[in-house]
Each structure stands twice: as C-alpha cells, then as structure tokens.
Length: 94
Image (cartoon, rainbow, N blue to C red; front, side, top):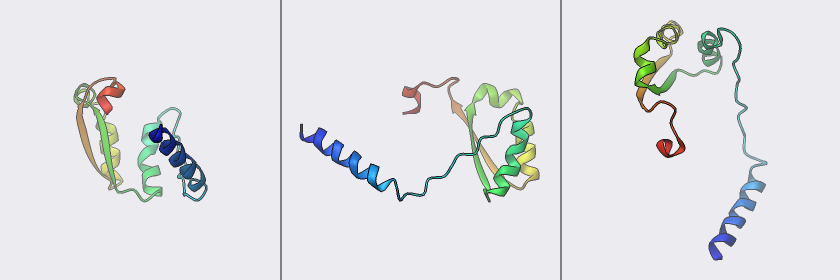
C-alpha cells in the first residue's frame, strides 16, 4: 500500500515537472532511399558518432555497406554492435 502511494506521488511530481523539461522531437525520415538521407540529418544536428545495433545476419549480408560508406564520407564515426538476436523480444532487451 505504501509503495503504491509512493509510486502515485512520484508520477504526479513527474507529470508536473515534465512541463519544464525540454523534450526533443524525433526526426522521422521516410520514403524511398531514406537511409541515404541519414548522414545529412546527422550532420545538421551536429552528431559525430553513431552506434548501429543489429544482428549478425544483417551485418554479414552487406546491407549496411552503403550506410557505412555514406557515414564515412560525412566524417561521422560509427560502431556496429551485431550481437543481438533477430527480432528481439522485450526479455532480450531487458
């Protein structure tokens, strides 16, 4: 009971505080060849490093080669983490 009360009070405080928190609006890139637009968007937002999280199959298939080349041309450092499982579940993420 006390824990539930604590949680509700915490939620209320966060609800009030969220009015003053600067929330970033996500950028949605969509459409044909949208992945090729990513380096330009990263440059515009002054991002210099990227972590690409994928699985081993996608990494070895060569589908990331174009993206990696575009990132190199834009002088954006990147690292690839490919030790995830395909189609991860919530349990895999947590």
